[in-house]
Image 1 (cartoon, rainbow, N blue to C red):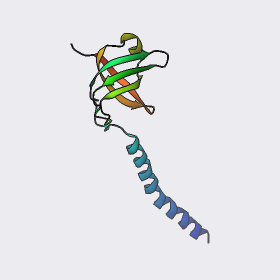
Image 2 (cartoon, helix red, strand yellow; image 1 turned 120 degrees about the vertical axis):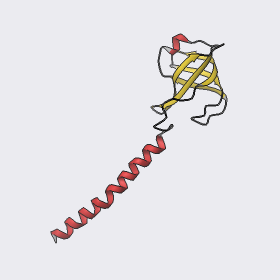
Image 3 (cartoon, rainbow, N blue to C red; image 1 turned 60 degrees about the vertical axis):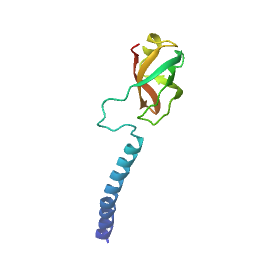
Length: 115
């Protein structure tokens, strides 16, 4: 009788391991917003409409953001670096890149656009 219990336990472990491995891979793939081998995020043209240092966010009227399939519009983004809140102001023409950081669309690169 103990052998039967051991066989059932081992069979359960052997069948369960591939399933948990597949489930783990599935979750990480769904959460990924850009391919792992993509090192450069697309730079998008925009104009800063508002900088809110108290919330750490910047409102930008922007062109399409291809890595997230977001059409041209005006949106609020989290500033990835607090220095962005001091270096830029409303009316600045910029180029920026966003990525998902801790579940929020975050500006990871921001620069003045060439005029």
